[in-house]
Length: 192
Image (tube, rainbow, N blue to C red; front, top):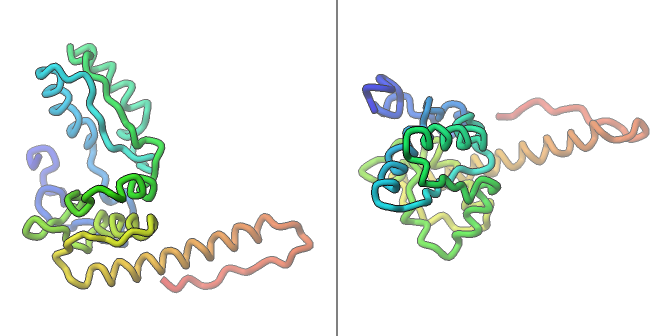
């Protein structure tokens, strides 16, 4: 894909989005189209009539929306590949719900890192941090073999910090919508 993405972090490893990076930092233009077309063609050639993708509910990108997949399926039908249905069984689930469903599966065999080190999760990138957080939110130990031995502790601290920040924001939101008779809380200066 280097011919398409050129000097993008996904092809050269430089500037890989870190744990602190927002979701937008991991965006790849046309990613789901590229990841879908080859398996879709393979399914069509081998008489398989369904292709399941693991697009989650919280995916913020336009190529993960129901509209995208409806239109993409329409284009594939025009191209003669319309015999294969694209399914998105996790479309209504967040990462925590997916982890809970898979709690008895060998999740240590799954891979989600965007900056692997010797075929292991790096432990420091955006996706490794999300992975670790999903295990924690589901109340599961993270069995992932991270290349960086400090990653688990670092990710645990980041997760605790995010939880504190989220809890503080929820308290402020509740108080902001309280009746005028309830004293208002002033936001505290950010500590992160």
